[in-house]
Image (cartoon, rainbow, N blue to C red; front, side, top):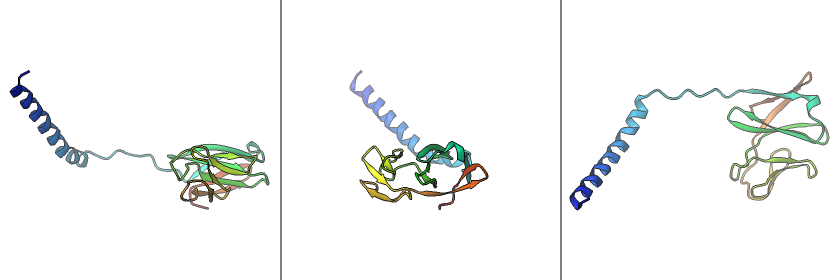
Length: 142
């Protein structure tokens, strides 16, 4: 390939890239937006019998994971299971009665408050209700 052909190719590729970057926002504006699924407001996580004291379960609640915990005293807690530091999934540690992010050893109490490690803010809390034998989690914060 001679110099003239190379320069023509480089100029053509640059012009095509420039034109693409100019028309992409226009096309995104003109095309209809993708339909997203509505976030549910209530999640049935199981029955009370499914949760022994000290048991936890991670479930998908819309687009985000939620951790539902039955503490050692029989109370229920529901929190967003995504660590506020680097978005790792947290786990309940029954022996320590706290929530742990194994990525960087971040720790939260059962109310979601960050108690040690790098997490900058608490976990988002959700309301938990027991209706009959069902355990329900509500999206509105507790």
